[in-house]
Length: 558
Image (cartoon, rainbow, N blue to C red; front, side, top):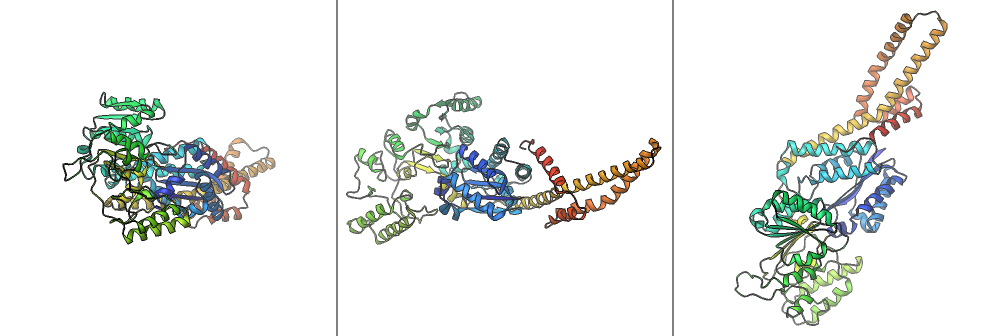
């Protein structure tokens, strides 16, 4: 059997694909169960985070395993196999081990060096153990990955190479200001009470916010998180029901959302409504105070604020500050809509209607005609932006799929940081020198794990050989007693020990050497050679393996 991993992550797929492929907790359980029920796999575990979905399995056929695991990922994610396949990566045997160890050390994270992935790996193993889908291979693999990750963090300065996604997101929100200085005195709203939301709440508390409001669909979890936060600072936190979120938004300065919802938690209209009750926005370089709804707000908000929507625009796009060259909100629009807008741009006498913009719209429409929607661009071309007021509401969306409507990018007075913008920001982050040291640790640990795995592969054969030798000794002693019935106990014991020592000495050097050879790359064939040379019963070897596997299933996560 061999280790196989099939998956996709922020490194292989755009956020829009990761968002659509995100698996609920129930879907993860069903995926693991269906994987072990499939013919090529005997063990399975799924590692699903906000920026990766990976399926690990012990398979007996590589090509059949890749096909089956890819199909299962597509079925359970809801993304068609043809669309999902270009974004999938495959790792096999030692490369699969290297990949998981790198993930555990934070080398493959969006923010290099973050340690939260260790908890997610531990949860993945615990889930597989609860479902009885983790056998000896995956138990050993995931537990060793946890040890390697802990070693990387304790022996190197990888923590200095990056922070948790929460800390990195808050740094992006603060716009270069120290998070403690930026957050001090602010009112925070945290939506969700899971591990990521709890980490965000704790980070904000340490940064010195004046108040933290926790909203969660399960009231008990929100209240419990508030109680924990209040242990450090009485009166800092309070819990509210989810239907109180719109009101809390009108008072919050910073909002962090990370829930398991499959749809949007905060629509653009909800954010716009919260902004409308805050009074005039502060525009840089001017004493004027335009209405709360900015020129690039949604049409409904602009109309409610008495601002004009561009007349006859088929998409109701605003007159100022819009360009398809860098506008994220056009992602997902259909070809027909953009074709209408392209025609309108060509014919409308607007100063901002340029040939470049018309060509860009036409190109996007052509792309949409082939894939059914506007493809998401990870790095849109930069465009000149109109002046925007200082943010009064900071939004951090750490959910996958996203909790907050990406259209709020178009609202003045709002700064939104989400998984997509974090991916772009982290791509340019400098790498610490400690990363090289962690890579060396990973390489050494992969070699050691591979050697141990190959050595373990021959152990049942060696045990079966020694069992056969013990049976031969017992048979010969019994035959000797039959020929010498008057032999006393002292002589019988001495003869028995002598025969056993002869057999042990004859077997010692070959069995030690064969374990050494089997641990080397390409050493898997020594087990077969040993079984052939000594005519070992395959069922005896298999019985030893089954006994070892049953022992492994009782082991818990590290």
